[in-house]
Image 1 (cartoon, rainbow, N blue to C red):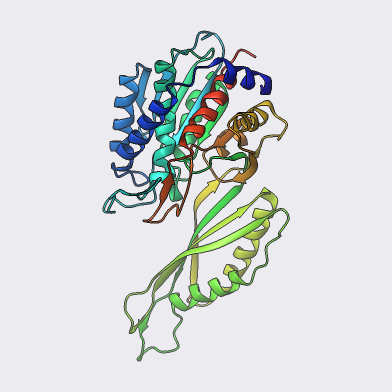
Image 2 (image 1 turned 120 degrees about the vertical axis):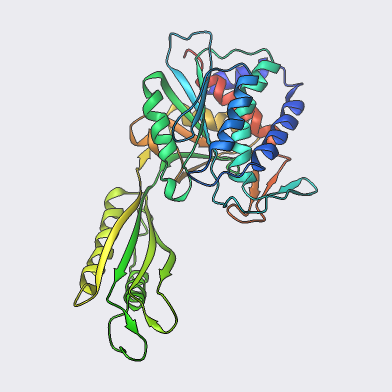
Length: 383
């Protein structure tokens, strides 16, 4: 695939790429202006479907999870195809101020980098191929997925992959700000919502009765004392604590939300076992705990020597970037866990993801699109 990418780069006429870049950035801004909290992606999916149809994609469809798919037919449609994917959902609520601010070559806007520019890169492929009169050899399935963030638990990609896995042999997943990085391995993620309950009472009259808030705080303290393994890398985070009725009431209910991650499934299970051991030790008398599993992302790995990984490195090298191999939690976890070759790549650089002052740098977008076109065409070749 490396030699093919070099050959493609030399044979393609890149004169129209600046116009394609400008169109892509315009699309990213239009997408960013459509609120799309996880589980509420329909308006954004409808916009993507309209663009698909305007570009002549076939079999445009929005499913019940608000995934939107479309087919760009290749010249060798008898072969399995390639899926290009990018998630549409954001961590921001529908009430978030989505005002756009420009500063030099940077554009600031919540959700622009994660993942509006990624979705725009997805749309840019059929647009670019149309403008440059290119037809890939294999079919390209373009899928804008839902439910990637937070409690979405990769639900969109799970459904999309199950629907298409018999028709595809490679997946290229897009995360807007990952330019220069190639995610070839997906880490295992387990998320728990742990709730403590007690009878509660009055802070003065019933002092000494067990408090659900106290129990959750105690559990949190025990969790923070856990020392997870550093190799394979394993982490945890208590993201939220909530509960209680009033400052002068002994809490009858309180809970915490725990995120656990590891490069190795066994290490993740060992960490969860320690957490559950502390919960059991604190469950006594009138204190009861319930555990709800709210996230369970699978792990997977693609050998760095696989042609798709090497192709992604070669595509970056063609635009003068030395790629770095990464592990992380993306939509790519799903196909990787089932043995389907997948990489996650980016369109540009930026910063402050998941913050209101999130931004993209527009300068790398040209090279980001060029490397994506090269990788997509090479992955969609007959070879």
